[in-house]
Image (tube, rainbow, N blue to C red; front, top):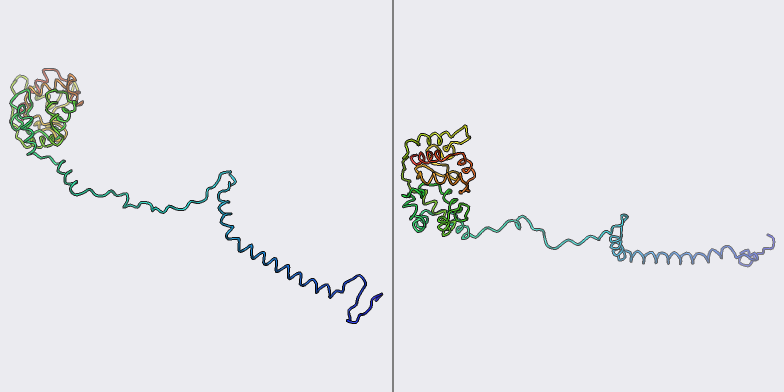
Length: 284
């Protein structure tokens, strides 16, 4: 058509235009080469990605979040295991230590007899049966009461210069031993001496004085004066002079190691104190 002409190879040539078949042949090798280069680059990038991802993850973990706070990367767990129940359980004490503690805590009446004879017998008599009205009988007294009084003499809570000097010679174990020894001794009975006061003493000891809110002595020390172990002392057969002196000391604030007795004694006059003390001396 127009100015075209047929060549020898059967391809039509037009001026200024490359033959269509020739352009297709030239494009095909270039496309394959480009595809190969892209594939090679992608393969190289994929191979390097795991190594680069770790630093990126660490950097992103330490980067500030939306709140502006920096989130630290997770720390590696400690290699030291947490203590289990066995670690919190204390080791059992050695058998010898347990036996020594038990022996020290257990009172020994025989050892108490020895210490009593060395320190106490001169004033409180053989077996705790004092023959001097000013010094109390200690035979059959409750061990806990003996220990408490000796400890308070020693510390000064119950002021008495003579008794403080003797108590200072005793250890706590000595006191326990002496208390155990005295509890095994039989108290000798006493007697009421003032017939005019004994009935008043009996009335107060057994019934108190309700109009003055004075409680009965028997409520704590029992009707026969035996007391209550570990709480209230035995009074039965005690010297009247000693009992009266202690009631006066409670009333006048001299003896302060029993607030309860101080309140009770504060409601008693001298005559009532003598009457109760005399009645107690004759209790069986």
